[in-house]
Length: 128
Image 1: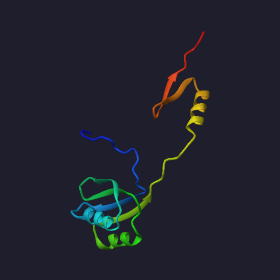
Image 2: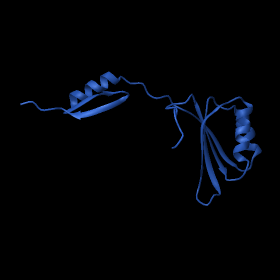
Image 3: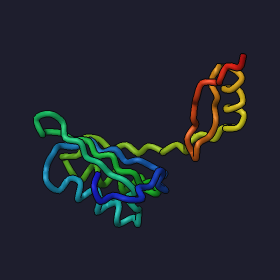
Image 4: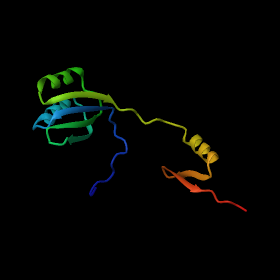
């Protein structure tokens, strides 16, 4: 993607709002206005239109969950919104990298090590 630098590997988003909706003007504007009214920041967003351009789904990652009252107002206030769901975004699992590398080395004929933040694999050399 040209002219894009420093993309965040992980944003501060804690919740995802999933909006199934008819593909009509103003639907997402109304959703975003409600989010703005609660002082919730959008971290990432995408809108995917389905075949035939009649329906779509928007996935909006937020820095906190919208209130139940806001979700109820959105459901009741726009007949083009088919469904709204809020999901909690799970934090990445923390694991023992050193222990995992040690086990991988012991269990294979590969050399396993870190190269920056990447796990690198190479064949162990055989000695005569």
